[in-house]
Image (cartoon, rainbow, N blue to C red; front, side):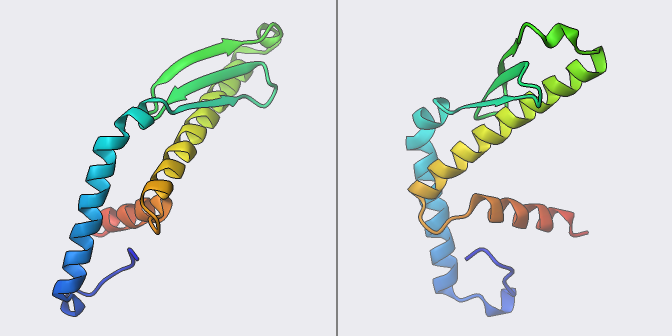
Length: 123
């Protein structure tokens, strides 16, 4: 659906379909803002002593340290915190992608992101 296209092979129908997909996505984003605002990702560090919550934009909302977290070295505590926040961000991203897949059948957010990154890396 979003693979590499040779401009010489583009037809008016292809352009119209791509424009339609873009319009549907923009319309969904407008209507889904409330749903997206409710996305809260949760995650915890490997020891379970650090838990974090993150919103759909990646904003860290909360980090909670368990009673045994202070027994960790500062380096371990930092690693646990980063792992918890990373897991929470991944959870929020998964939830966002699930919402997008439901609203836009056939759309794969991960594939679209990979294609965008590939296009941006072309010099």
